[in-house]
Length: 273
Ligand code: DGL
Image (cartoon, rainbow, N blue to C red; front, side, top):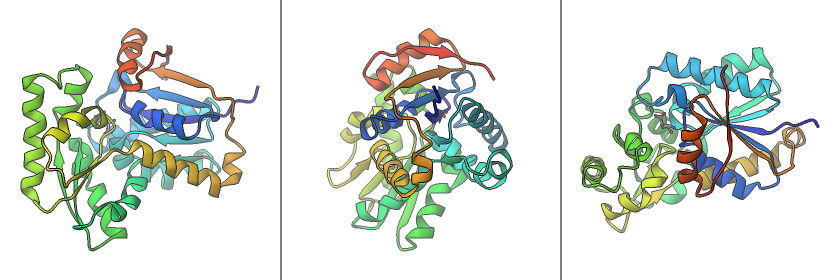
């Protein structure tokens, strides 16, 4: 069978929060998820390293038949997407596509904020890249954007420690810091794929007027729209409703942790490239 699943790449588990919504939105499509758990987290790594790792993963997914790859990782979208799109794709295969998670979220932001003051929560890498403020201000120069890096949040999720007193301390600390930077914020984008798992805890520390935005649904709707606008790509994506999960690390621990992200069990395979 000629299988051409949509590739979904993340540094580890976080992209599963995006995959979940992609599958809800586009259940008939085939998806292959690749988590580079062996080299995660990416959030603290340099531009060059994130770019190299992301390009390797994209090439791997292309070699497995994917015509379209979603970088379901904010850090990879911030640090590697543009170079891959502009520099590598024309050489590898100009008909294939790689899309990220930042642009779809940015496009929605104007619709979500009334005060035109927006906050971004992300990894150190995403915040340092300045991708969100730059992209938002390109489209909406009147929106003011402040950011807060939350380096403890990914480990808190991965180690299931976010409900503990220690976990609550770090969640509150970063939320307070962000709101202090701009008390007029009425919209916060969770600019890291792990953070939707902390939504309940984050909401405890936010005033009611603040709208907390997860990206999954936005990215899924944006992909649906993209496939509608690009029938030449849509026709190349296979549609048997199949999913495959690959990890560069231990399969057992991927399956155990992934079930928390997906709220259901799955079977993964190991991959090295
Ligand atoms: N997936 C990453 C992101 O969305 C978070 C995990 C990591 O640092 O690798 O930024």
